[in-house]
Image (cartoon, rainbow, N blue to C red; front, side):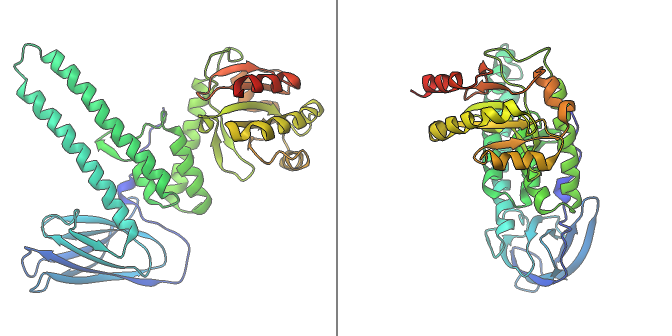
Amino acid sequence: MAKFNLILITLVVLLSGCNEKKFVINGTLTDAMPGTIIYLDKLGSSEIESIDSIALDEAGKFRIGSKSSSPQFYLLRSSSESFLTTMIEPGEKLTIRAHADSLNFPAELSGSPGTQLMIDYNIRLQETLAQLGELNLVYEENIDNPDLAGVMQELDLRAQVILEGMTIYTREYIDSNLPSLICLIALYQQVVPQVYVLNPEEDIDYFVKVDSTLFSLYPDYEPVKFLHEQVATLVLSLQGQNIPGGAPGIGSVAPEIILPTPEGTMTSLSSTRGKVVLLDFWAGWCPPCRAENPNIVSAFNKYSDKGFTVFQVSLDQEREIWLNAIEADALGGWYHVSDLKYWDSEVVSLYGFESIPANYLLDVDGRVIASNLRGDALQQKLEEIFR
């Protein structure tokens, strides 16, 4: 499995733009010594750049800021080593009130939605760490227990439930907040060093989703470009692991396919889970494929509102031929992907077919129900499923 070494805690958004706007942070720290120094640092991919610093006044108040032409990640910290990671948009006016020793959990914060989202995630993460800490205390209390092995087994099960809860929260967090760049941090969040909330293999859909969304918006932003390269490497690795000796059999899970759409967005077959899917291999240059397309359109129109969709993988070489065929055959209602590699496409060896059209009907869990259903056979099978 490809290793992901991107340090996302220290991100800086290097987006294009020339109209700088000043952002301001107005803060109050309670129980702070007058004269305590507050620092504002810009977080980079490999370094921290000092922006400004200011001393607290007698009332514990401070005002600090800078100019920016794009969203940026900043570190607001005090000389007492308390800090808050922020994501600030140009022109924002952030107001914060916090205890001097807990800047990362401010009592009040307004004016910066991105920063609030980061705090929300951090609060949920701290809850998870606290729950795991309680399990560790139970372990320490039972260190001399003759049945320590049984205790550890129970604690392990409870830890898995806690971690799964954090994983579910992170997935929902990404779903809710894309296309925000804060999703990069959630994508690579660690519970403890080297223990990630999301598993790149199990959560490949989320890596692909974040990559395709952010790369389409910020193709020149270095951390996004790095993520894009890492996801491409991971996809190739996973596809290589899934190459079968032949065509997938009835009842087996269809091997994962992750290829670009006509718009260039990486899309996975597994993203269709929860629907009955016709996985169809075809090409614009293939007359038998084109002859079958009206039957597929008919099936889609009849059953799409009942949970049926189509995932078409093209073996075209020429992008124009592929797109023209989609338009001419009125195939716009479902998923289309292709690497435009003709018979050299990875899907050929992945699925072991030697001619097209070829198809597999998959259930809601991605398992093969039937293969090479065409004409009336496809219609009859779908009627049987959705009756």
